Length: 178
Length: 195
Image 1: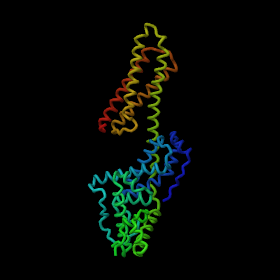
Image 2: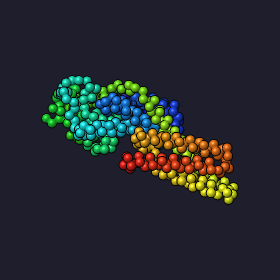
Image 3: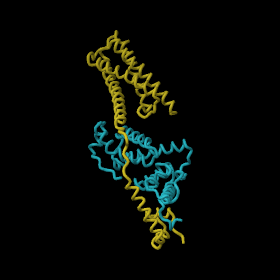
Image 4: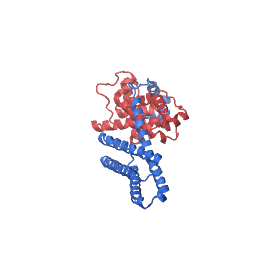
């Protein structure tokens, strides 16, 4: 999805001064991209809603510290991605799922020829997060590694495995890659 | 025949591929098709419809923002009041006669303690600390009571700017007592989260 990046400086300045209408305007401008990012990274819609809420609580609290380095969406998106990744890490600790194990969901066979959105949902949380952050949001492997507390090669290998799995689920390319 | 791996294809997409992979994909139709599929998959991912939040969470965020702002205002008004009180105290010093010296000493002592406690409170990052529900309620109650006393002190200063009676001393001592309780709660919460 395309996010309108331009937010008037005056709106940011008013939000930094605690103007409630300006804060609401920022919330309205970014609630969908933040929720979409969280929902694509997380399996659970309620978790994504919680990330949306936590992200804007952080934005409201920290907007005074935003100095205009980079664009506002980049700043908000990083907060949202960090919070979503924290949830993934927490859930993995609870479920004792080793970070990086990409077994996908049971019952999804190679060549099942499902649509991409469904196939994407079958990936593990970590793989989904890496694919979304890299391919859609445009994060580099260095940035993803930093956000996840992992190495660049971890991010690269997660992306490769996730694409190999997507390719299999979508029944693509029977020739090469066998 | 050896074909490109997914790592090779992703490297090709990122313009970071090896010389072998770049040459191979020019000659191999199957790998070119794989690379095209990869580009299409990424384009389709980017084109997925935006998922919208099912419920409006603004009211929760707004309420939290209001609490945050009220807290900041209270903290700053406390600091402002303490500074103003210190200034008024300095201006009033020459006016005290021998009868008022005991009250003056008590007042100065209460103000000094209040300022020290304000300092201590700042060390506990009051905005960022996670509190249990019970502690948060206690903090809110104490802060509200301090705010009431601050209001009384401000009114007192407006009505009787040169007053130096026992009532004023009592108000400052009450403020010190509440501040001490507030610091104790903050210390407990800091221990609770393992500071």
